Length: 178
Image 1 (tube, rainbow, N blue to C red):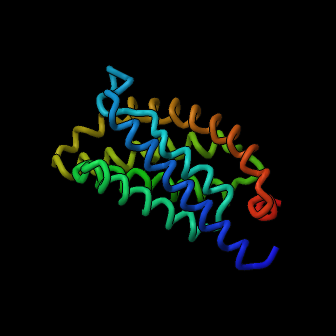
Image 2 (cartoon, rainbow, N blue to C red):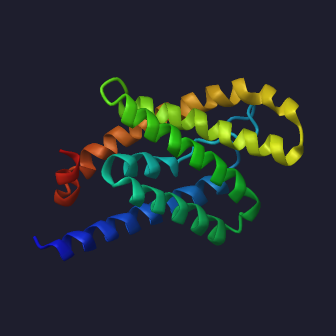
Image 3 (cartoon, helix red, strand yellow):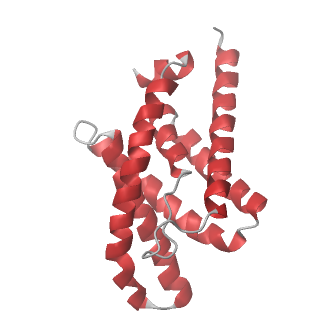
């Protein structure tokens, strides 16, 4: 397969991941929070795409995918007010997952990396809420959000592990993983 076909396949793969992330994000916004004791806490289904990209794409493409997904989801859903929260949570989550993946590759599974991402995503959103509301007392919500991040990170990690096994069947991705 020549190099231009390989690049085209990668771009198509990024576009597919982006569209899946947008769809998952919009679907999740349409439903009320599933945890009544934790207002605003959601599973973070779109983060599934971030975890998959972290294991199948170069870092620069992961960053492109992450911010493209965030911006397009906000534009399509009209969720401009939620954009800042998503931006902070996703950025902090991505950085934390990247550090853990690079520093502890033999000790952290995809599920463990996803758990770190879930916890840091909630931390990023909480920091934005504290800053916007000028209410440092919101930090008291951190233990609840951390538990929710661990639970959702576990679920997203399990799903990511399952999907990654199937994504590895694509030749252009399989060559990057080995």
